[in-house]
Picture 1 (cartoon, rainbow, N blue to C red):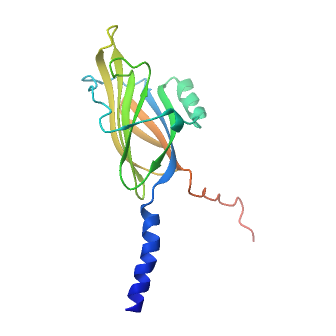
Picture 2 (picture 1 turned 135 degrees about the vertical axis):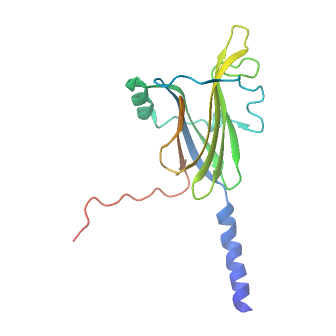
Picture 3 (picture 1 turned 90 degrees about the vertical axis):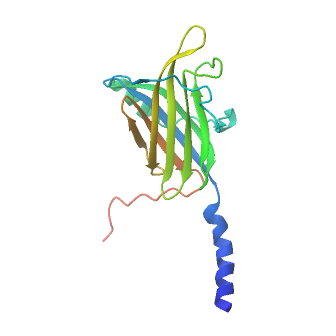
Length: 188
């Protein structure tokens, strides 16, 4: 009986840590693969950001993957459409954020979409983005869509391929200690 009480007390200390949300840096690069023909889908829905939090200016961060984005652009094989970085909390409950770029017209953007993320052994990512063509009246006339689910490894650049559109994403903990680098040589 005494062991049971001790175990219960120990679990009460450990359980809150397992379910606590931590702060993460999320960086994404949305690209178009120039050699693959564009697949035009139906126009993006007006409620494209339904249920998602909007990224505020305070959460925005300076992207760290500029070298990667520059290499992609310089290759001629890719066009970088969007490159953003922000800070947010992630946990075991799904968090959905709305990401957009360009001038808003009637609630639509040239590039708009959502990222839903949930921590686990890996981070589950559900990406849903539209690249819109908007006419002079502000109406969406055509869209290209990226819809991809993935289990991404934290701290590493992950590639989500969706044919003509692709997403590179890196999710890095800002609270967990950085992994130690392996020694170059093992001492005798």
